[in-house]
Image (cartoon, one colour):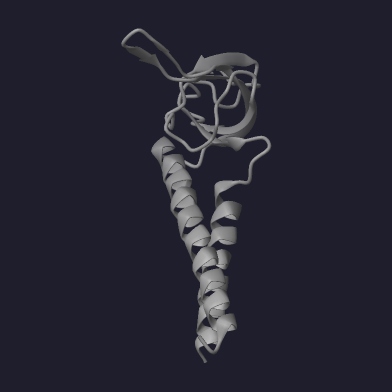
Length: 147
């Protein structure tokens, strides 16, 4: 092997391409879960009231607690507290009890909500941009190495 740098740079490029592709897939899944609401929704903060748990053969999805207007009154102040199962319980966010979350709810029916992200995580859009940049970087390194 007369050019060990070529092997190293191609392995480096393959690593970043793999990391970017894996992250892009997860970010697209998170963005698709936001589409389950069907409307843009109103953004608010809440917290996870109960973690997902299994009792015998029954599965209980996580519940989130947040404040929004009462149903049927979208212009009223957000004083009603909801404790609901989000529409995207399969989201990649770790929904453990007490975790602060950013969510969106339907203004016409505030009981319908989706978790956008946890308070300490990137938004799905920012995560998608970073992962696409990693893929482009990996492909660019590979192309530059082969020139």
